[in-house]
Length: 249
Length: 382
Ligand SMILES: Cc1cc2nc3c(=O)[nH]c(=O)nc-3n(C[C@H](O)[C@H](O)[C@H](O)COP(=O)(O)OP(=O)(O)OC[C@H]3O[C@@H](n4cnc5c(N)ncnc54)[C@H](O)[C@@H]3O)c2cc1C
Ligand SMILES: Cc1cc2nc3c(=O)[nH]c(=O)nc-3n(C[C@H](O)[C@H](O)[C@H](O)COP(=O)(O)OP(=O)(O)OC[C@H]3O[C@@H](n4cnc5c(N)ncnc54)[C@H](O)[C@@H]3O)c2cc1C
Image (tube, rainbow over all chains, first blue to last red; front, side, top):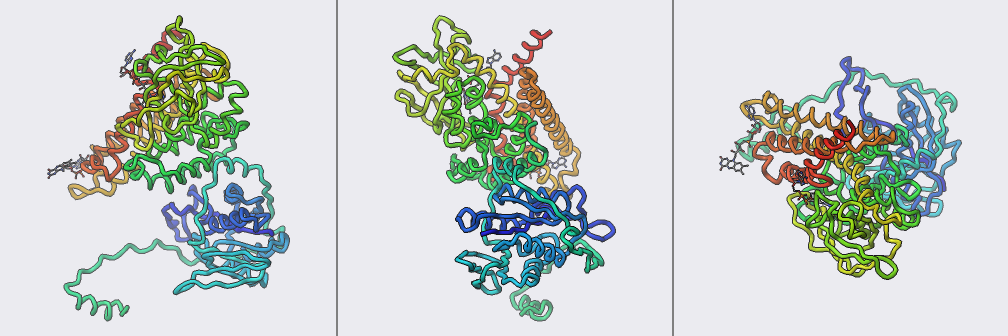
């Protein structure tokens, strides 16, 4: 069984984000970039499925500038078999990403696509769902646990108030939540071997996908600082304030 | 330069992340329990860290000296006990074998050293032969089918865990100095070989040293490193160049770590109504530490590159070891000072680095021995 795993290059989660002076977005120049943490979880799950003998080939796909190739290399170092870079310097919105992925799926014909539930840069949480819709495939989002069967997959999902398990027929889309697994560290020998694994390059134009944006960023601002708290004199006053001022009781 | 930039960057990032996420949270525990958890040891092995300097043909990564010190710049940013675990397999415990071992000896041991399946130790120092290692007394008499070893080795890193010892012993009693010394590859479990109790040290808890005792310990003739007698001391000295650069890189890393801790503390800590980082006297400490650590980093990188180009770096490597180990001593002292009372209290971990760093000026040649090596070479090369 063949598996496609999607990886996005994003600002490293340890970096302190700064907004550009003109408010058009966040500072990206000379900033450390890494694989989206949810995608790392997706790669880890893919590699585990391969180690269990359930998957025979893992293809890692990334859409982005030339440097997104490094993100694919990381996936290859973790255990993916080959990579596809869909190279573009444009800002690619979730719908365009989903369309590109749908095209790649059409060409690669995987039995399963695993991807992060969202990327930590714009937190859209849309791509997996859009891809499922475009392909007409079943989806198991916010995966907490997956179990691959014969031509099917059980996905236990994190939902409000607990866990829900859905049975999907393959081919299907799975998006990963935080607690699915703990991704491994790429070992040094595997990082060196990753260089020798195949990495193909294509582009949205070659795939025939129009990536022109449909959204417009109006303004980007720093989060407001935390306001000073107030001290209350008694429990009664606290309850009163929660009821009347905060309106949470 | 064996690796392309992207691969090297990937390697460094993976090590940095492993240090940050897995090793740093365990620093207190490892110091308290004087033990590196078995699970972490397995992870360190899985990362490939035991084989950094072992050639690829024998299952290692075959890093160049420059690559190795750059990895050490990352790996050294946590308790040196972790580094010490892989230190002997990459340095003094394997280099003699790589440089002077026979093909058969390399095949037998290097792959297991690279994977971390086997830990190696380097047994040179004796109770009465430290700085003057060439005066060592451990004897290797020719016996039936090989040699018989007798003597005691002192302060041997990783000895309690070692599967393989590179042992320096005198094969020619008529030669009192370096020329009478040979190196042997002795496996743990060989009858007549035993380890003393684990030494109680000032710092670097979690890393263990002990005596290694040989009492009529028979080893086969193919245990003689390189198959030649009288070469042992030359092997030991050759091994030290690489070791000195590696240790120097670890000193740089530890300095950078405690500078980072001090800076964060100084920016947070307020006295007299402002962060102490605003006081010029504190700034002077930060600036001096940063400058010295940077100087050491440059020295180490330059000397490593020069070694990779094939130059003789014996003098420069000694300069690096002397400067970097003394430098980190000053830097950790300032780090304690910047932390004030907190720097003296164990919870903050700064006093632990203060104790850990002290060793760097002593082993693999004391500062005085480095000075002697440097000056002697200067006079020789005039
Ligand atoms: C934690 C630890 C781990 C170690 N690991 C190993 C190991 O794995 N393998 C191994 O073989 N050894 C190991 N050693 C031993 C280490 O290399 C020696 O301790 C070191 O070489 C110094 O020798 P010594 O302790 O006998 O001190 P000494 O040689 O007795 O030195 C005492 C003092 O005299 C000074 N001195 C000596 N000779 C001169 C001189 N000619 N001129 C001026 N000053 C001089 C020294 O600089 C020092 O200040 C380890 C030691 C420690 C503490
Ligand atoms: C083992 C121990 C025993 C102690 N016993 C007692 C005790 O019995 N009773 C008691 O009351 N206290 C005691 N103390 C507290 C001790 O006196 C303080 O730790 C000391 O005065 C330093 O204060 P601090 O730790 O808050 O460091 P800070 O005042 O936070 O100093 C941190 C750093 O900033 C520097 N700094 C601060 N202000 C300035 C400035 N204006 N300009 C330049 N540099 C500055 C300091 O020199 C230091 O390097 C003890 C501390 C220890 C560690």
